[in-house]
Length: 338
Ligand SMILES: Cc1ncc(COP(=O)(O)O)c(C=O)c1O
Image (cartoon, rainbow, N blue to C red):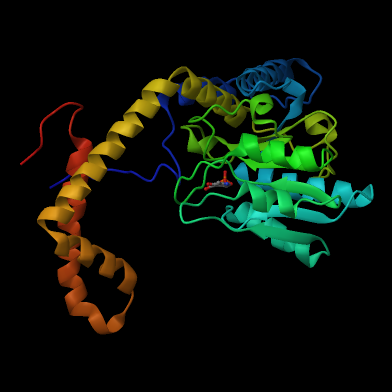
């Protein structure tokens, strides 16, 4: 029997052992509230601020430009709602531009803004998922408060031309705020905020071998934003709630490891992709009906009238999955398994 192999790293990644080790002292020993004034708080605060400095360095940002959140979804919501409401309050416009292929954390936040009276333009994409920079330029007006374009798409992996998009927007309307959802890019691509030319950037730790339930929003200094979570004065009054210190320390460690090992990790991913596509091409040539069956199974999932044929097809699908799994499980450089 083939061992089960997990490939959906766009959904989430396992926690790196080294990240767990970095987090452990903050779960067991340094449990103080980082906002307290007395001794127990000191180590927790040191961990928190060390993590902020280390992440800021990787992003090419100032530590105070990072706001810790509960993950990518909160960062996206804060970016969209925060920038839109700040613009409305300052009379700078009520127009938001985003794309039709954003994660729901952006799309649903944009839809809510529409319900609340903002105007939202959803840019379409081509067959490969790319936005059109001319469409973007046409969409920007003096009333555009915010543009949000994701860096890497979570379904098909398209890498959007963020640098160029930010340049196009700023050239037409320098006061429009540019946000990018970099949840799928962090840990895999260079996300230096000055090179990208963006004002806000979202990331979430569990996509790069960090813990779940923790993320960050980069907000360039002087970007107008109306903070959304009210309560205590944490994160310099920008996001209320006692920080998840162990999670944040883990996120910083995970990001540091990702950029230390960037080349090796990306080479490994390219190797796996090559093997999968190679195996897939061979299956298509030698046994095209397996591919067709696989597609039909996916299309007809849940059709009660097809119970029997579906069972037969599932057996075929199982064989195909096993074959693809064997292709990625082979040690690097090893010959084809029979
Ligand atoms: C592109 C993108 N944005 C946002 C999110 C939401 O992140 P989180 O799960 O950390 O809330 C995800 C998660 O799948 C994502 O892929």
